[in-house]
Amino acid sequence: MNRLSLGRWLLPTYVVLTFAFLMIPIIYTFVFSFNDSVKSNIIWRGFTFDNWLNVCNQQVVCTAFGNSLIIALSATTIATVLGTMIAIALVRYRFKFRAATNLLLFLPLATPEVVMGAGLAAQFLDLGWTKGLSTVIIAHVMFTLSFVVVTVKARVATLDPALEEAGRDLYGNPFQVFRKVTLPLLLPGILAASMLAFALSFDDFIITQFNSGSIETFPKFVYTAAARGIPAEANVIGSSVFLVAIAIVLIVQIRGSRKAKKLAK
Amino acid sequence: MAFVAFGQTPKTQVKTQTKSGRVALVLLMPGLIYLGLFFITPLISLIMASLKQPAPSGIIGQYNFGVEFGNYAYAVTQYAPQIFRSFSFAFIATIIALLISYPIAYYIAVRARDRPLLRGILLTLVIAPFFISFLLRTFAWKQIFSNDSWIVNVLKDVGIFGADSYIIGTNFAVIFGLVYNFIPFMTLPIYANLDRLDMRLVEAGSDLYASPATTFRKITFPLSLPGVISGTLLTFIPISGDYVVASRDFLGGPGTAMIGNVVEANFLRIQDYPTASALSVMLMAAIVVLVSAYVRRSGTDDLL
Image (cartoon, rainbow over all chains, first blue to last red; front, side, top):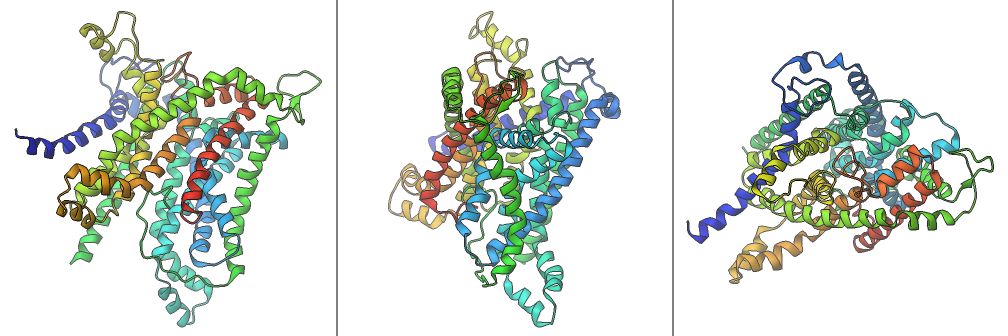
């Protein structure tokens, strides 16, 4: 092999090897979801579908998973509404204190989770609020809000205001214009933002641990179980979430590339 | 957008800001008030908690408001090694993540530019670790590196490892886990930046007889610096506060605790809120210094 072709293959080889490295723990988690394990799931003891068929045999795992879903759905809904409103205002309107607004939205992105978690917990302590499902949801809306703003804002910026003007010219009132023109055009951005918020909320551990009290969530369950060994049922849930997420991303990608092809014609 | 450059920024922004401030206010206020109540006031609560003093009753977890700066002195003297470790781990892990991620981002953004399918697959693979629980993937590494795993056994057979050597619980294991978990945070902003790299500039470099290495050093890399800085912040900040990877139940051991581990233990286990809060405030202060250098360079409109 001469030097030139070595140089040409060096980068692709590196890319393949790094991606293989990135996939190792994912494959490991998936494989061990089929392990015929007793209690702890460390040594391979043979293949079985039992863990997949009876996920809820480990009652705690399923309760924790259910709580995580409730929290993620509620937090996503609230954060998406609040965040979309802010994103529209940032791109479309001129107002004073813009720099302060940008800073306020940026700070949660730049704050370590442990600081946000401890701060909110200190506040709940001062106020004497009991930690539970509602305090976790409050916390999750707080730290996902800025991510929603960033994602939706990118979409608002590409929106042609002439379309909304056309709506107004056709005697649509502001509410109708928003519902029939603005909202449908923003929808891909809003969907992307809510998927991001959902993923962030569902996988959050640090902020949740500080503000959940005795409420069990899926990441919290894994954290406490780690001391004595994580049951295979947790691998089943982790793997299924992974498969669903990958499926959604692939569908979005394929639809996107089809659209691009159509436009190219 | 520079900071969280997860997507592509549209270059042609349609600028039609109307003057109607009242509508803007209605749109902005609910969200901003929310952040005021549940992000800003908690930070104030944190500062106040860091200055509290023990209640006269002496009950564990009972504190009164006060101005006890001694809490900071105590936190620093008591936990100097953990503070130092947090920042050095974060620093080392960020550098390694940058070295690993840059070529990946470059390949996806530049080499795969004309192959949308390959590009889509690679981008999906970069974010794939996000889809499996952070704790599960960290725990998977623990099992892969555990004392009776084949990796450790092979290292022992080859003679690199002595009979009583181990990986889990060492600084290496913790930094390894941190690097692994935060590679996507480094790769995506660099990718988003290199995606906008104008290839004509690179061609101009080679037209002027610069070697590919020189072109990279003088053109590509300097142009990608904003992406590198975003990625560095996005990696360094969460790592400096993380306590899962360094936890004894995951990749850490008795000598790997970071600030986050101390805050968790003091706040949630022994209920020493003032010490935990003082440490959090110091961590936040360090991050604010770091970020304000960035803000001064790029202005506030570029933040989001």
